[in-house]
Image (cartoon, rainbow, N blue to C red; front, side, top):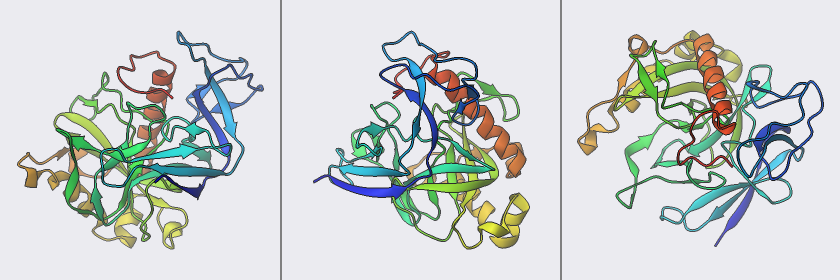
Length: 296
């Protein structure tokens, strides 16, 4: 039986592939700033769907669960205020301004079902990952809330010269949220980024942005990587070690980390977020090949 629950998200402007062109007022931009629509009305794609912008004026986004959890059919869809499906990847804005970003929870802390946004399905719902037709689980619980930054994309055609020339993993950027509260699948949190880990998974670059929800009791204490070590001692090492080792029980080699095996600071994390937001902008404008990815 499908269930619908409501999660709160701040009203903001979002870019997405709409069914019709939308005339945008002057001096207004979309997403994280990479897509500027100043002095132009709409950008028409070589597609049946023009690329345009719209605002989610209703401050609430509904999450609708379809199917039974921990089955192949289970999906978590996102609905706007009118009940229409929207994409958590494309339609929820990346930034709210003033250093605040949206984070979408895929995997609640202290759980091990490997949930992820289905980037190749219409409206990119959250589902449980599979391998050879079987549901995937981590070998042990993840100790932090885990999910994605909307409107970001790690371009698999781009090599990062700073991280061993590794290419992007073709997914949105991952977030590890270190707050004390266990969140729910599909919850949208306001976060501030604190650090970045450059994980290399089977040769692919898979960024992990370490962040904290603004409603966490310790959020005001942490603003950069050094603060994390001070107020959450050992957490950055634990995150690195967890992601390095989680595949070993399945007989796979450990993951590696670039940047000297150390977490980069907030400034570097924001640079990664900006670059991957620009890559997402090129993706949805179809300046690069989308392959099997869904753009709505």
